[in-house]
Length: 190
Image (cartoon, rainbow, N blue to C red; front, side, top):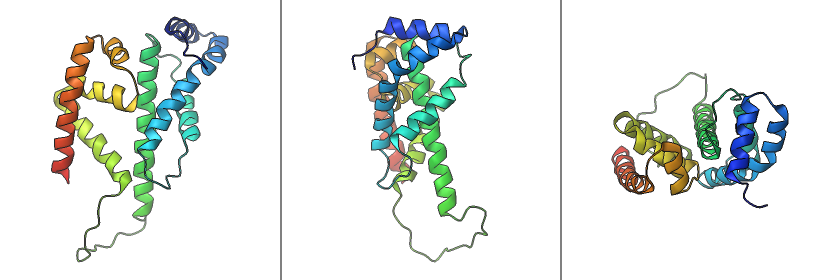
């Protein structure tokens, strides 16, 4: 499938927001491949045996995006940025729920202070990254958004610049600094 023209996707997003249900029907096949690519990227970072499948992630994100019909979509890049955020939230919620079930959910908790500590689970890495991104956002929202759009959304430097309305050079600089900061933050956390 060829890459849809940005203009076509943008026009369909605006028509959908205006209430044209036919626009949503035309939009879906144009964006599905890109959503699936973003979901595959997300799922590649998940541990083996992860029970959420790529298609299920795309479908869940799509359902949530359809509920966002009143969002004032600026363009294709904005749509995919929001899609990336939605997928990230789904995975974070899934990891938290899975962690709660592993810890017994509502069962009474018994302290096991004498047990040896075990290495961090892969799901916990996603939670740690989410926590580090929130910390980054608390003092530099733009760098946090750059990471979210580039890493989680799979957006190019140019698309990220377009969404954030900054230059591509600024995106490159923010991306570099944010990666270094996040690596240091994640190392300190462990």
